[in-house]
Length: 124
Image (cartoon, rainbow, N blue to C red; front, side):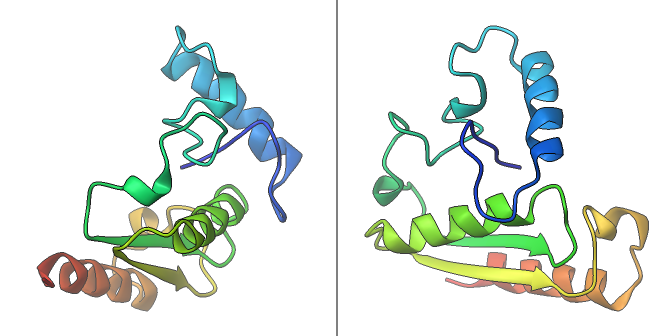
């Protein structure tokens, strides 16, 4: 999950406030707050997305994910526009919510997500 000091379109204030509380517990020594590059790879001062050290990237979210969809979509777009030479793909599970695949492991969208991940990891 990503976050940041500045909201992105579609991101709720409540989600950012919750993440800020969680991040201070996860990383109590951080000095960047929500713009720590580990949480916000798009923050000023974060390493350039153009230099990602992989050849491909699959960014996944769920259509009704109130907590993370907007930030995941912004990250996907930022990678696409960064000049990175790898392959970036977006996968959105329709009509599903945050971490749906943990609670409904056998639903159609969970199985489709797993199939896509397996295929993605097996591709050259």
